[in-house]
Image 1: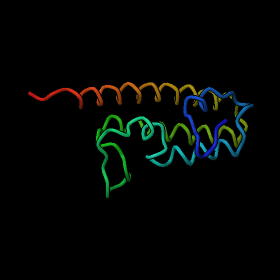
Image 2 (image 1 turned 45 degrees about the horizontal axis):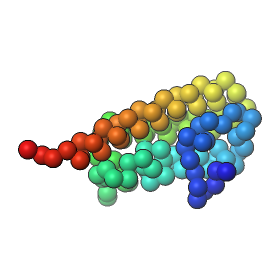
Image 3 (image 1 turned 120 degrees about the horizontal axis):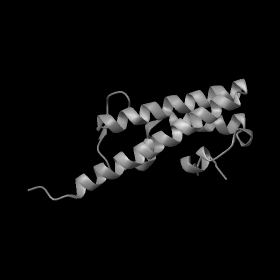
Length: 120
């Protein structure tokens, strides 16, 4: 069960169009719009962040930050699809969000591995 306190992006992105209520989509949109709760923020807690500049709490890595921003835009488009009852747009955006989630996971793994390597 997806709740504000227990939100899993992979679980959300597995939902079919008819399984997503306006309330759930609104919750996902809110979470995607804030770095600490977006897909990127949930995965990269151990990576350096930029504080005091916009976007707040964004990862310092440009590639990761860009993928997170694209993820947020895609979730916004999914929200529009739910409101407009556009099943095709929803599924296209969901597929895009899944792809971005995979890219975010891969980049986060790469950066975390780089952090653990000893410097010479």
